[in-house]
Length: 344
Image (tube, rainbow, N blue to C red):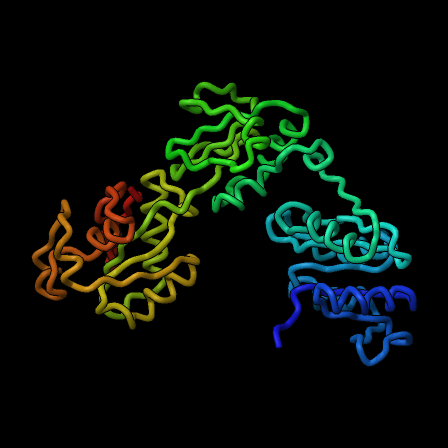
């Protein structure tokens, strides 16, 4: 049985009755005050103590209580809008379902609407873009598979969208394509960042780094691939440090990396496997004949002697990028090499 990803908390008898119905429909794990909870609810004596254990464990939390109770329970555990889970507060009479925290990225606005639909409550959503019936930049980015960099700038961008202003977009790869025509009308595409005043909001859909200011929101497409070669036993820290350094030196966004790639012989290389996990990237391996078929600018007789091909990192980067071009050629550390390619 799949563990529910939503936690429900009830502090009154009426709330428990409402919670039982919601727990079945969502589904969710129901927690109830110990003196009231029956066999279908996990009992608790301290709500704040329980939430300290569960807050990071669930993707969403629904408090059937007054908003003040929920606020006091979650306050010590709040971090930032990019990582906080959704929090919805529902009164035990089922009149109002309030999106309390992480309305956009966490999904609390949608959850409040879902809870309202299940209980007959009124969904209360107070995020400015929703109130203005304007798109939220975080949700557009998520739907387009773009990572949010410099998230503090979402405030300025969303404020402009909520005010009905047109927000400039620099999108050299043509990846910012809101499917909803109503959303697209809120944006104006520009040929370069220099066409937008520094104090005006600007969305940059780019794999290249740039100055991060409160008005410049970078959305990161996963269009870079890093090829990696390494000696046997190379530590993960060396590989991660090399890839990170090369990205910094070449002005490439680490968040735009989609994968690490190497030769099949490195499939069991512990340091390489750990480096991919640390960076949160897929790991792709290629056969020697696949790598040998790629023309590279820096072939190596030494690599050919040991691996049977003249290139590992450059050839693997090009293959993993779908035949793209190198934007960072082969760079060495003492025990590893890397090259980075941009997808076609």
